[in-house]
Image (cartoon, rainbow, N blue to C red):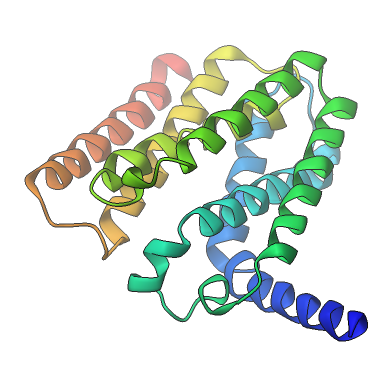
Length: 220
């Protein structure tokens, strides 16, 4: 029985990873964080590419899994075919989540100064509190999306050693605005409200202004 349960858990996690973690979007996001980290660092070189890419990917996997676990009730209505919705036992996924948390915490403690580990723990604690507030999944979902996406500039900070503050800020802001604009445009479950339309316009304009301002000849 135990062997059968372990095999079932393994199959569920494998199916989840294939459909939610090994996707073009996730790999592109990890690549974006990796390139931004190299650009924002004063000491990292292309030889560090592999380690940064792995860490970026593991961070994204941890928080994507956590997002999906927190959104099960919402996904039952809007994405009924997802693995976490159809699975009757989510314990293996929580075990995987804890394993990812420990792996990322270990990496940070080895690669980065101790204060970065504190920031990582605070990020986990903050999102843990947020995910407990079920109302944010419903009528406050648009605001929740904007808050949750703030984790990506923090990911960039955690991935970058000897950062150049100006470049780190520009890269983090651009990543946030890019991902937020993309989600607002592509998420069909969001209501078409004037607030959403205004937010799309503001964030797209802010992204363009950020990129144009920094790439203006005075910064060349």
